[in-house]
Image (cartoon, rainbow, N blue to C red; front, side):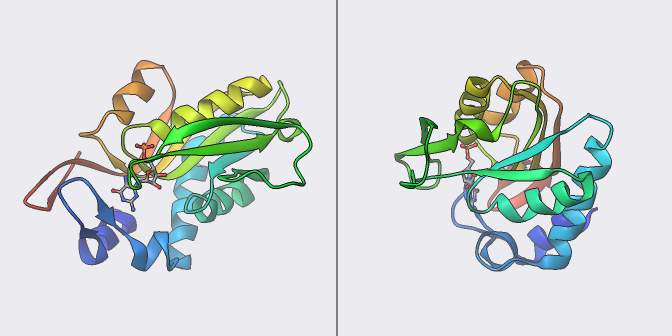
Length: 188
Ligand code: 5GP
């Protein structure tokens, strides 16, 4: 069992059958050693994929995306959840938030990615895949190609996993939860 799975078992708290709270090591406080190890695992999986940029959505994907990007020797871009006045040529779409149960806008400066970029998308959680679909839409508008998807914690019993696999992407999840029965995790 990898360190992330162990940490989830020791410190993760199920708010209900679907929502796992990981504030003590990933979503609020960041366990820096754990995040470095996660970055290393993503790096080992994607090192030969010709990645030129790592992309995430703010904010909890930033730390693992950064840890991976520095190993790949690429820059990292975080898609923003609000549009700053400094953006000159924004691309935007909206995403339905699984945890907040409402739509929110996401945006990226168009020039951040070019058609010859090969993107590794990294995020903290994969649930129904809405955040990924939003990122997919924005990245698609730049002409860049998604060459891989790295997820820290995947809940395989929700819709995102199947969407990504059916679309033919290389999906690599560090901790994949097959099911939760009375808040007890069964690993995929
Ligand atoms: P999706 O868009 O795939 O439905 O959900 C992914 C996003 O929702 C993640 O970026 C994460 O912010 C949030 N999320 C989804 N499931 C969980 C969960 O069980 N716990 C926490 N803390 N966040 C989640």
